[in-house]
Length: 617
Image (tube, rainbow, N blue to C red; front, top):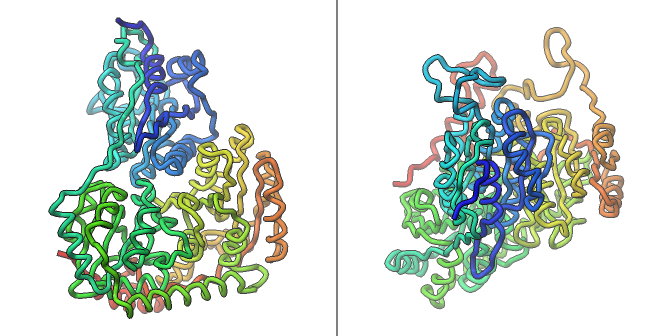
């Protein structure tokens, strides 16, 4: 049997009948579609969504933001649910490219359906078409090829019969997921075809927990039993696998300490006996010292970014071995590791049995306790610094951390705040620390907060955003008002790009071009450019106020929970009061030749740091 429908109508009908199942728990995979309509999709996908209200449509303000919202929705759902994003051809499509890159780098499933040029070509060039003198088979949607896990252009209506299942295969793959892009020519969207009824039947995609090769698992257990100073590095795969509970039990039973990547933060509660906190460039002293001396590094669900490995300087034991547990073979083999290509939860369940009664040596366990106690005191010191006003960023983080409950979610992405939060934030349960640091996308924060709130309206969401990132993409405040999705937004006003300003100073360039200042004498060195963030937030529909000093901030945060709609608190911070770096280094190349003495000095320090970089072969 067949059903005659337009290609766009058939696409929506297929998407609303897709489900995923893991551990006997079933979820509808697509919970609706974000979009902005234009001539490239309004008469196709727009018409299909209009006639079928069972598949919700959400209107955003910016195409990049809608992809961030969908990615955050998927992340907080442990990749078991996501949203669709549609745009017109041209700038609407290319605005999504940054969001697609962020989703793919962070391995989060989002389905992008940008409009495309006419497949029949006879009316070309159409509005917003980028012409090529070399070929007619190209459009701006080809930009998505490099940032998508799967890419296709639907040139005939019947092609979705094979394209949509392939898109689902990638989207539901724990190892291969990311952005999936189907370019949809605007004429083909409106064409009808007799589609097989089987295409629209409910389909359940089974997310099976891959188990490790038995010999690899036995070798892994033997390595653990031999280890005298092992360290677990928990990455985002621990959370996506929902392995936090078994990791906590495994760490308690063996005494092996756990350090967390940005994506893996929250794998353990901050007060778990084996939790050493953040790992790497933005890590704690205990985690980085133990990593430097470790004889066995057990990477679980991590891709070992340069922030995790401290640019390949973190692991200095000449006899260090790596054991990597990862669903992606690509990551499991990194650092010449013993690769266990497996689901994190399944592998930890099996390793718990195979390692038997193994415990780390008593002296090593004592060092872990000492590092934990020292770090707890350091966090308390920074939280209660009493700086200013303007107060320190560390105090702002502490104030927000203290008002959050067990299930509240904090979201951040770019600037100096992610590094400070990685170190300082005390996570109370999994999926409450939401950091986009794979791409560190400025503008992600508010859009992502919206996605988190939509995924679970019962939770309070706290968006931590610097003034620079706020100015790039604040308009989704209006979308949160539209959807009744209340966000708690804390804008840290440090008058520019404080993170890069600090890095510039460290590189000898004196923070050049990183402060919001008026031009004077040909340079951006005049008075600060004042921005009325409170007035801006109110104009978008939010409650808003400015807090001056710590007492004022505490009062504003307490009032924030009582508001029924999105609320913004703006607080000025001292951009020169930094949270220290602890026992770590990051490779940022310094100019080999310069007339500036500070740059020459920074170059010498950089050369010294590079000597610690290692290849693991």
